[in-house]
Length: 361
Image (cartoon, rainbow, N blue to C red; front, side):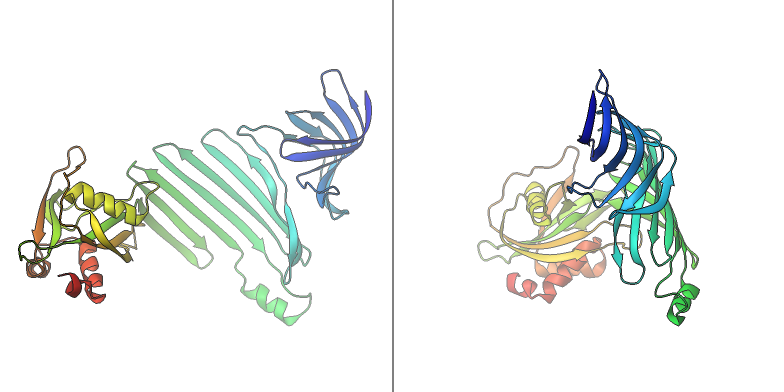
């Protein structure tokens, strides 16, 4: 059947054609067609296809085509190509975006092609073009094997020209612009934490780095009221730590679970490890124990608790002893090194700076 003025939605794009023919299985053969991801009635940009074969729900195969922006044909043409229509992992063209910058002019950028190499590796090649002469190319490949490692490689080249031609400020900028950049990131997944190796490279030099990515945790300074005239006390736990290979005196602490806020995690950890329920809660902020190599944050919380205690809810295999120290007893172990938890030291100092130690103890 012969059809005219065809407008169909195919995948995430739209096909518009003046003349076409549909066969018995639904395949369409069109000419003078437009393919775009712009949903405007008159699209702002599109690929002008001289002729194409459309298999609904599968793909479009086309002959000579060129890019049109705001009804202006651009000298960006390809002799042959196709657009796959698939919700699954597949290769395909990436339509560019357009816009205007004061210094570099009108642009088309972030257009290119996506290569779905296999289930573990892909490649994205993008380009950009500006009316004042700037242009750039970039490529990024991402790889991943679940529970083992992941990473990406990024390479780019930018030829940037700003201002008007033959103007002094333009020559000055071009003389100082550094066009090359590439980044390499590699992450080893160890379930509880990830080790990421990477480097940032520019003409100024290479900066390698290694980061241990771990979930953040909470550290709780919990004060319980005295009974029968006794002094208020601070809850401590005595727990064996494998990394330093010793028993360590600490404030109650634990990891923040997915979907928890730091304050929710603090209340849960205090209830599970010490059987305590807070009556007053003060957020003491966050501290980064080793910002040069860890992205793990320690969220510090001070809590004045109720007198009653609940049964402990320890994790399987977790061994610890709950202790309660007066202010003088805690200051003694802080001074002599018996207390070795860095986040606990900071929690005590911040609570002291805010007047909580004097007010609560």
